[in-house]
Amino acid sequence: MTRPVTRPVTRPATRPATGRLNRRLAGALIPAYCALAFVFLLAPSVYTVLYSFNDGGRRNLVWQGFTLDNWRNPCGAPQVCEAFANSLQVGLLSTLFATTLGTLVAIALVRYRFRGRALANLLIFLPMSTPEVVLGAALLSQFLTLQLQLGFWTVVLAHVMFNISFVVVAVKARVQSMDPRLEEAAADLYASPWQAFWKVTFPLLVPGIAAAAALAFSLSFDDFIITNFNSGSFTTFPKFVYVSAARGIPAQANVIGTAMFVAALAVVIGAQVVAALRRRVSGAGSS
Amino acid sequence: MTTVAPGPAIGVAAPGTGAPGTGAEDVAARRAGAAGVGLMLPGTLYLVAFFVIPVFALLATSLYVPVPGGDVGQFMPAFHWQNYVTALADFWQPLARSFWFALLATAGALAVGYPIAYLIAVRGRGRPLLQGMLLVLVVAPFFTSFVLRTIAWKQILADDGYVVQALHWLHVLPPDGRLTATSFAVVVSLTHNFVPFMALPIYASLERLDPRLVEAGGDLYAGPWTTFRTVTLPLSMPGVVSGTLLTFIPAAGDYVSASLLGNSTNTAMIGQVIDTRFFRLLDYPTAASLSVVLMAAIAVLVGLYVRRTGTEDLL
Image (tube, each protein chain N blue to C red):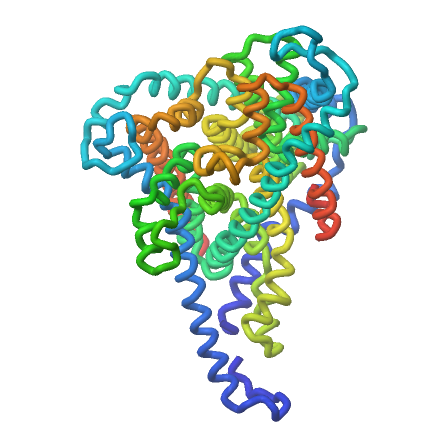
C-alpha cells in the first residue's frame, strides 16, 4: 500500500493520502455502525429485564416505578409458573426424543452409503424450509382428522418433529469433522461396531450432540406458533405471554424471561471463557 | 496490514476447515449396508408420520366442503378446488403483504447483520475471545422469549416512549404521528427477530475467507471498497444466501409481530388469517388452502432464488 502509485496521470497526486483518510474513516465507521446495530439488537432484551422491576401490577406496559416485589414473588400472577413448568417439561422431553432420533440420522447420513440418501436429505431439509404456520396447520389438520385430543402430548409430538432437522444439521457438522479412521482403528483392535461406537465415536460426538440439544431445547422452549396450533387448552410460557398480551402481561412473566435470559447468557459466556483459558493453556504448552 | 497477514493466514487455513473434513469424506469409504438404513429409519419414519402425512392431510382439508345442514366447523371430504379461488380472492392482500414485509425484514436484517458479521469475522480475526463475546451478543436476543421481545417493541415504540419523542423533536414524525400499530413497527420487530439468523451464516462464510485474498486486492491497488465489492462480498455470498433464506421463509409465515404490533386494517399478515380461520371461525378449508398457497409460493420463490444465486449445493 505504501508502494509508489504508477497510475495514469489523470489521477490527482494526493490520491494515496485521501485513500488513507477514507480507509481510516471506514475503519471507524464500521464499529460505530455496529455499536448502533447492537443497541437495536439488545434493546428489547434490556426492556424485558427493566420491566421485570416495574411496579406495574397486572398491566406491565407503562413504567410505574421500581420494585422488587415481582422478583420476591415470581409465581404471584395466576398461571405464570404453571405455564413455565409446562414449557420446561415439553422442552426436556422433546429435546430428548429429537436429539436421539436426529443424532442417529446424522451418523447414518455421513457415514453410510444407502439408497434414498438424497431423498432423506430432502426430508430433513423440508421442515426447516417450511414456515411454522404451515407446519402447525398441517399437524392440526392431521390431529383433527384423527380426532386426537390436543394437549401436552400433541405439543411434544410437534416439537420433536420440527427439532429433528435442526439436530441432524448440527450433529452432521460434527460427524463430518471426525476422522473415520479412528473407528477403523477401533475395528482393527477387535472392537465390535457397538463397542467402537460407544468407546470412540460417541465421546467425540458429545460436544456436537450437546450443542444440538441446547438448540433443540431453546427452539422448543421459545416456540409459539406451532404450539398455538396444536395445544388446545394446554398452555406453554410463550403462549401464556401471547394470550395475556391483550389484557396486559404480568411483570412476573418478565421476571421468568429475565431469569432465563441471565441463565443462558451465563452458560454461553462461561463456555467462551473456558474456551479462551484452554487456548491460553495449549498456546503456552506449544510455544 | 501487509506485514501481519501471511502468518495468521497460514495458521487459519491449515488446521481448520479444509483438509481433514473433506478428505475424510472422500477417502474413508462410507460403509454400505443395512446398518445405515437402520439408523435412518426411526427419524425418517417420524418425519413421514408427523410432517409428510400431515402435509397431505392439509392438502385434503383444503378441498373439503361443509356438511350440508351441519354445524359450523363440520366438513366432509371432497375435491372442491374452488376453495383456493375464494381464499385467494378474499385474502390476496394479507398474502402479498406477508411477502412484502418478509422482503423488507430480510433487507433490514441484511443491513444490520452483514456489518456485524463483518466486524466479528474480519476485524476481530485473531482475537478469539473478542469474537466469541461479540457472537454471544448476536445470539443474546434469542435468550429472551420471542413473544416477550415483541412486546418489548411495543414498549419501546410507545407513543410516550423515548423513540417517538425523539422523532417528534427531530420533526421526522409529525406531532400526531405514532409508531405503534403501524407497518413500521411490524417490520422493525420482524427485522429484529431475524438478525441473528442473518448474521451467523454470513459470519461463518467470512470466517472461512482467506485474508490473503483481501491483501491481494490491496496489492493490486484496489481501494477498500473495490476490494470488498470484488473479493469479500462474492466470497461471502453462500452465507448471504442462507441468511436471507433463514430470514425470509419464517418471516413470511410469522404473525406474532403483526398481531401484537400491528393494527386491524393494513398490517394483517397471512399467518394471522390462517390462525383466525382455524380457531375463531372454524373455517378449516380456507385456512388449509391458504397454508398450501403459502407453502407453494415459498417453495417456488426459494427454488428460483437458489437457482439464480447458483448455490444449489446449499441444499
